[in-house]
Image (cartoon, rainbow, N blue to C red; front, side, top):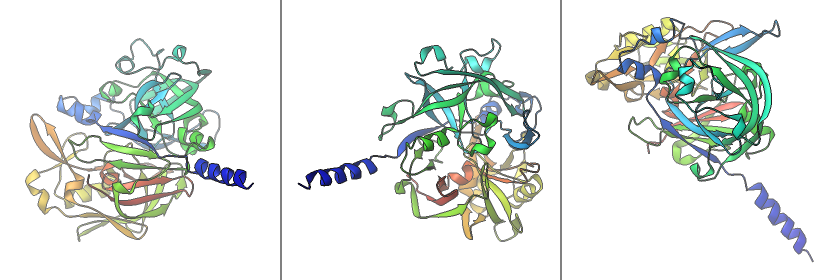
Length: 410
């Protein structure tokens, strides 16, 4: 009569293996910056001459303690996926952003003159049976002003519909998120996404809201508390990539994953030993700190150092902080190598030069941009999609580390 014991063992094994990797297809769109440039718009005017600043330190209105608060504009964000909020799910396209920690989407109660709100999907709490009122006001500061609204609670489905993922989806219950009633300037009018789903640490969450992935971890919805990104860098390639919650997929990379410990649990921050351009220029001498940020398209560094880098690759400045390189010179450009955890991660010219359409012609832009991030958060380098597209990236909350492996070309 040992059958019950054997049956319990089998059931236990089945339960332990029931977790599947949740796959969210990512779509690649033209960034806000490129959209506005192609139609002849001035990005500087669009952001009301506000600084194109990504990270800063702000003081909380409720405490004298300094807290990290993200200043982002998403001008260069390109990869988006779908989530649902409410029951039944109301679908939204969001940037899955490792450089912030809050979830927000436009509200049905947005201001009458908020053009960005009216051209995007809007959350309607009256249509959700799982909505719980919160009502606390929130503000997220951008270069163009404050995105504001109030907090609400509801169920978040990832992806929006289970048939969007081969492994089905998950539902994160009792998730607090922002209903945006005012979006800054008209920057978000040109955005192809509705909102942002931050995947950074709780420390940088505005209003101390529990981030979606932390809530997911508490509800034990995945076997491993990790998520990973594959970004397809083929301009014409679709899907644009894939976000995996709870695991990795070896078809997306070659060799073994190499890990670096997170040095500060706010952004996904790691230590970089140096950055070399060919055999002639070394930057980040003596080591520096870097952020791994899926919400940024480019590879960003301190202004003066990036000026040296641009000069070394023969790039000439355009407007709006962009640099151009004659396309015919691509094959002769140097390799840029980032040293992380004692390992060199090389970026060849075809990886850091971006071919874009402008005025009916193809031009080649540098994938590097200079930006000074002030203390105490900075100075920082930001490893955006130019880097992540070349190296499959794993974000490991169980061990507080980031893993890289050479991305496969599919």
